[in-house]
Image (cartoon, rainbow, N blue to C red; front, side, top):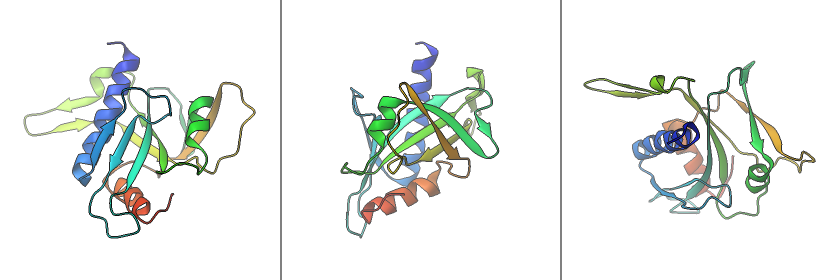
Length: 166
């Protein structure tokens, strides 16, 4: 498997680990033609939507100097940008970017009683972003305070259950 495929698989595993802890079910797509790699669904919410769902576009990068002044600067392909923005979709859509070390040996640390997945994962919504005249990509800025973790994923699901987006 080449490094790009490994990054794809690692980002799915990373997010699925968080989703499992939160108690969400997942569905992957065999064809990613709508910029959704993973859908997460909750059950038993007592709000407007009892079984909310969020759709995620997953990216994984080991680019150097991608974080500057508390902001992650990620070049997103124009197609993904256009697919993720706008509010004419049934479920909230989020861009999730996992930043990993260059050396694949530093992605996971296994011990007798634990496993640590490195490094940091960030999320953002670009639904209200404007159209772009860029031809190939748009640099998305994600505050590093928007880490994808159990608390933030739970909050995104609660918002979806109320029919709201972040």
